[in-house]
Length: 259
Length: 286
Image (cartoon, rainbow over all chains, first blue to last red):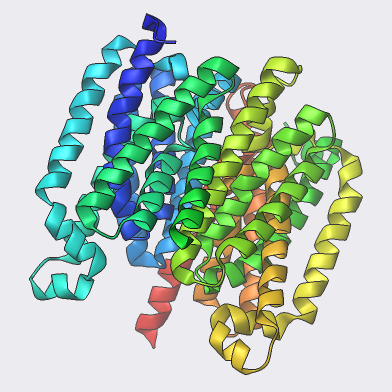
């Protein structure tokens, strides 16, 4: 199970879970589950373009996720935010579908990008991934108190001259970076389970911010490790276990918190 | 060439005819339901039902039955689960939706994998996620007409209560409406709409067809009933236009036709921008 071909997956998933768990804490706090679902999908055409033109997918994914943030901000000015999000994810997916249909290995690539490939992690992609995750973590820790205040008490934050719009930009850009890093492992569709379920469970179980934050990271690690192990034993896709175990985690935390 | 627009060959192709009919029905239903969805800012639930139905499509292909029933069954199941999990508290709704969505996507990951590895359906992922509008079974036309007919009849019958609880549920409760039952009915209608667009333009583009036309229409219409007509018109334009453009792209790009869903979403996006421009010009005129 820990042989060299899976070792990359273990390292990548461990790194990712740290970033996803800690950012997920704010996704849940800010009620941004839809944004956490939409931005990984916005990265999808980047992966498709990378496979069409043959460059490293991380650049394509990151680039398109950031374009997605711009699209979201511009369309939010035009109308309702949730409509902007729905249009963003559909139009970017359609663009990705177009790129993939222009390439040759259509069917295989679609599945890999949407649901992830456990064995798709090369040793060369680990270093950029580690860099990306540490950048996200440093930025998050640097702004932790401000982000916490703005997410829970926006009026109070405004009174302290903290701009909500700037915090939103900051948060969405971090989300874009994590999405780009996570897509190769769990796929565009299930990144957000890794973001939402552990953090939602953690916030059910603890009210203290740093405590809940650490718990969210721990849950994200447990979720991704057990999913890799189960996927290895059963030969079934990793994202199946991420999705289903994420839902179970959420249900258990609800039952546990109620009793 | 006497027919540069290839209209004759377009309209006489039987695959195209089925596509046009089912696409039009999906457009009409999605445009109408979308009005309620946009009004109650329920976009995430609308998207989640569409995505969730992919699991049903994947299971249906695995079992070898028609994908429509899989899409429909799963969308209804997800609608019931969402209703049970967290319609009461708005704070919880977002998370409950997300968790249901994650679980159903996980299941579709598994079944699409099983479809590809253990049956001969190598195109299952593409078929479920991006739709297979030119490969629809003409026999599906009658069940589709029936579904859309019943759904539209329900909307017309319960037009006022549905609109009221969408705009202001507290007011609906005060007026003595059975809000919970109406909510559930709305979610089931939403599931039906999602399943039909999953069948035609694909699971992941269902959201655009649901939200885009309705949001544009709400911007242009002065009265509620007008918004329904506008939304249906915009959705029809996008779907029928998208099918035509995809058909035509076969001639432009020597043989490699572009996906229908790309053109449909492109048209929806352009019409949305046009409606924003039109509405802002109308505002400055006044």
